[in-house]
Image 1 (cartoon, rainbow, N blue to C red):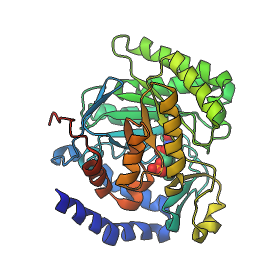
Image 2: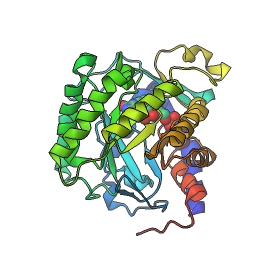
Image 3: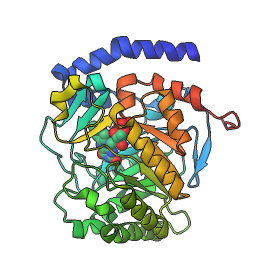
Image 4: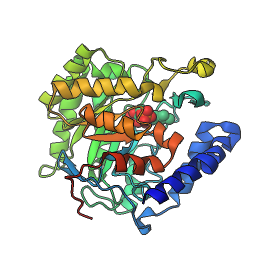
Length: 359
Ligand SMILES: Cc1cc2nc3c(=O)[nH]c(=O)nc-3n(C[C@H](O)[C@H](O)[C@H](O)COP(=O)(O)O)c2cc1C
């Protein structure tokens, strides 16, 4: 296993990554779209899964291991059938919105290579919740059935033109569309690229939003309501995080995802100084320490399970995220820079000896 992983690692670093990073004259979004289109043709369910085994039950969901793909990489679920074959233990599709929307003008994604980072201001470009639902329905996916070979989270967000005062209805419409297919729902109130979105973490908006969303999950599936997770920003002060946690616990939220991208530019290499001035959310290595701090703060202040995400670029970063109290970790930028071997390296370094695989 270790030999295959190091061959995959070397192949990605020496061949595939340079080729990917050259696509579209180095345009990261062109490379991303090409990768997703190719993976969309792969039915990974036909490929024998070589997956780190480290099973865990969180919020009533059985995860085969503790490493997931973060939201935003496969927004429309185009490649949803491919992710299990990479070894992931879950995938979070989306963020989708109730209605399709184009997102911000391009260019809107930038690689800060010396910093092992990305800045993006995509703005929830997506085909809409109904399109994702249609795709999953066509593949026969339904909650709990593991059709895709791994638990499926679906992240929902707000359409850009919808006022904050009307946000709850807009999120409810997205929830209604995707609820039958999701093992958990992630409420995204932390993208920095939809004007005002992060204000939804304020008590005045959050109480109504999460209370209504949790209530709707019970109406939709009284015997099997889908667990709701809330994804937070790394840029909130501790007091604001505490307030959001209090609201989430009271409303019956099942877990927290921490964190989304940051508007800060700390820890960016001077070689990337020009790109650092691009507007948008920063992810990758510069975020590692802050995301871990937020996870540590949250796990110290609540019993809710936490999915740790942000700058997990190495097995040590993943270990530190688990040490900070995360129940699961997710990768986005680390997967782009290090490739699929990272999943297996993290698995080898962090699998608990007392966890027994059902497979
Ligand atoms: C290009 C790009 C698009 C993203 N889109 C979303 C999104 O739609 N929804 C979301 O919740 N997070 C989104 N994220 C944030 C990631 O899920 C993750 O929280 C963040 O990038 C930090 O993790 P990382 O350092 O491993 O990338 C996006 C990140 C990137 C780089």
